[in-house]
Amino acid sequence: MSPILRVKSPGLHTTVQDLGRDGFADVGVPPSGALDAMALRLANALVGNEPDAAALEILVSGPALEVIAESAHVAFVGGTAGMSVQDAHHRSIAAGRSVHLKKGDVVKLGMLARTSCGYLAVEGGINVPRVLGSASTYTRGTLGGFEGRALRAGDVLQGIDSKSEREELQLAAPLDAEFDAPIRVVLGPQDDHFTGAAIEEFLAGIYIVSAQADRMGFRLEGPVLAHTHGYNIVSDGIVSGSIQVPGSGQPIVLMRDYQTIGGYPKIATVVSPDISRLGRRSPGAKVRFAKMSRDEAEAIYREEQTEIAKRIANLRAARDEPSLNVEALYDENLIGGIVSARE
Amino acid sequence: MTDVRFLPAGDRALVVEFGDTIERALSERVLRLATRLRELRLQGVVEMLPTFRSLLVRYDPLQTSGATLEKEIEAHLADEAGAQEQTRLWQIPACYDRRCAPDLDEVAERTKLTTNEVVARHSGTRFLVYVVGFAAGFPYMGDLPPELVLPRRTDPRVRVPAGSIAMATTLTGIYPLESPGGWHLIGAAPIRLFDPTWERPALLRPGDFAKFEPVDFAEYERVRAAVERNDYDVPFTMIAS
Image (tube, rainbow over all chains, first blue to last red; front, side, top):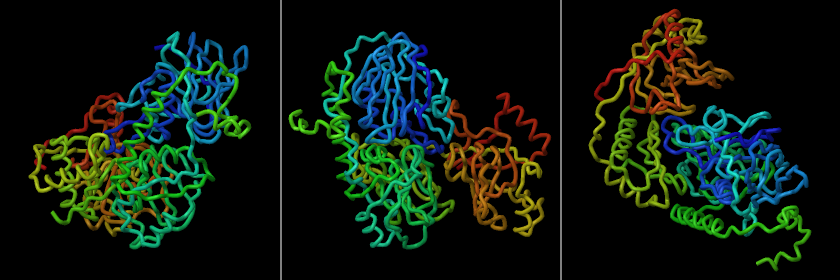
């Protein structure tokens, strides 16, 4: 283990995350872990890591990091904005592609585009002490990750100075944020605390992600949901995706750093693959919900695992044009005319 | 067991609900089921979270399904208590000195008791740890004697000091870390409630019992210093659960 990256500027809220910790809900510790688990897994795969290796989660606007190891093999997955590398050439590296960097290079992630979270993985993983079985940061509990907090300028991250000769890889297709896709839910556990009209409103209405959206929960604004018998329940267990409705009638989707028990009725639960999809949305983004049965939701979870495995199996050698941010060009429709020719 | 409800909580968890009130009898059923399921090690169960009146069971849909798990759990609802028939009774040092108890006078006034009577009733009660949550290691314990029951504060504090012993409604608890809080602060415990390096990272766990042992301010400071040096263990005895 040796120092690999120095934080020159930290970005808005950059934390070390893996796929989270299970098994401590009964002592009040939520899972934490990546908001967009799919993007984390793909970023890790691009540099040859295990899917749950620790990487940097970047929210909204990214850090600038100086390579202080002899070399570092890194990849960023999340939206369409890539990395800019300040080296002799000032390269820009597309999202969804890995690249070898050398000592003194500075990699900079600016404002993210077409997502609000992304993952910078480093071959060998970010090395932080595992706390309760995970490297994930739970900032509210000052637990895990890098000293239990978001990164600050001057922090030095440890990893493996690998002098890797692994091939640079890229995703076969960019990871679409799916902003227009409905967020799928299973009703319950307390849907019987809401009027029939409230359930209909919830499923038909359009909600907007409010400014109060963080790793703990996303407060939504939209149709007010009426409770049948008050908005207090005897507190019971929360999971990632629980949708609480407090007295305001405005739903709150609990994300990864939630309080483990809660005293508001939960109208529904977001299916786990769609927590990633919701995690990509920024304040102002639209959210529509669609209900499904639990059996369907479990099937979707299983399909999602297959889909991720397929994307990983389909990683391919990076094209030798690292200065062109192809995904961003597609996104901005500058070369949209040739999209159909790609398949 | 017709009063038990199975409720879905998405694609990776289900809730076994025994009722919707805070009472010992419900909690005992929740804890008994949790103990039993821990012994059974059903395929695909990731973790369990016992609360006042329900058990949240998280599972891996690659290894089981909610429908399968419900059938398996249903078959064991009537099982007798599991092997763990002993539980811990913690003796928690508690300083009710005004320096540690900013709300003690107000609580006395509102309950029409003297401060000594409030302390005597609080420290004279054996509490059950119903749930650990809100913050890592925060124990929700009950039940308070009926004459101590008060609603939450109307003006929650932004900062409640770590170690504060607090009460609201029928419950009492201890804040593991400085955090916001809306309960009445009637004392302080100089102990550590949560440490991720412990094998059991929370001192108090659902199903444990606790009793507060009054200490004066000098003893409070002495114990606190010992805790800082990692030279203090909270005493407990094993009792029948």
